[in-house]
Length: 174
Length: 198
Image 1: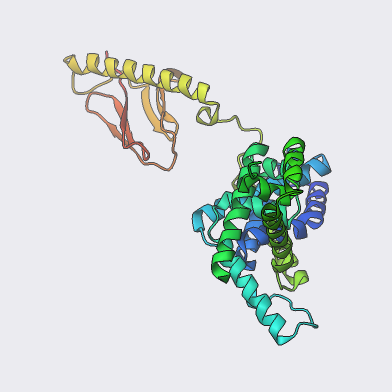
Image 2 (image 1 turned 180 degrees about the horizontal axis):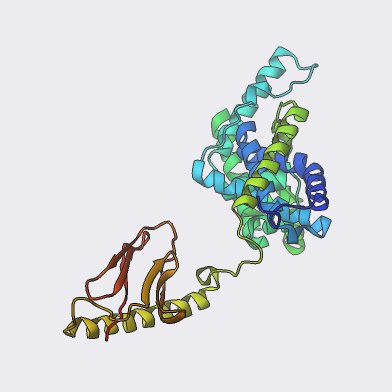
């Protein structure tokens, strides 16, 4: 690497702090979008590398965090467009509550399976909007910024996603 | 009173409706059990999704250490292939407007080169080519250059955009140098000629 391209130790320290402060949040966000650890790990790394290569955007801490979230959303969205299906590879390994009875465990496993199948009927953008709004609890305005579209479009994605999942679950349970 | 649309009920359940629409739906819900039931189902689905959405069951310390190392590696690999900061941006990476200007200039150069070649090709010239021993025709990655001693008397910059594509150089018996290459994207062949004649 040339000396000009090598980051200074101050820059490197700033980058490390930025990664440390945001890694868990971004991993969780991407994991909820793609549904498995291996892909979430790859995409998280990719999102951070993309963000850190544009150092000029990282000066303002809060803006940088939002900007990173958008990069993460777009990276995961591109992946979903290419790969389509949503798979919770770790669904059986998800932590259980000690107080769960065998019946509760069975019900919970069944619900997760239904949920996974329900998410597969959504388009990548609907799925992303639903995850960001209903699981990550981001306000609709923020989801719109992530998806780079209007608030009206995001509302439409969210409403479609909720309706589709509801219909799917009703069919599945009947 | 007409029922609100399913879209409105789905948005109402998540508090995503604009104020006026929310008030309209609320007014309707006071007297409609069926729509109340719909809203309850949407609300329960939201809570269930949040509750049931599994968290990754991983050893976070190990995973985060691995990701941090990979991010650092990725950044270092990226900076190895990044262009030198002081280097001027190539014209083909400029804005689309400048790309059009560059394409126009390139076209003009090609036309002039072609005309020049045509003119010279039609001339009857001795086979031994340039008579001056000091005139040198040279080619490089950047194009073709004709030098008379230290003076550059002719130059044709390489117009290819992709350095990876192969350029075929040939020296003609008439004392000219020809460079041709195939654009990998379009399949178009570009030929650059430079001649020196009496």
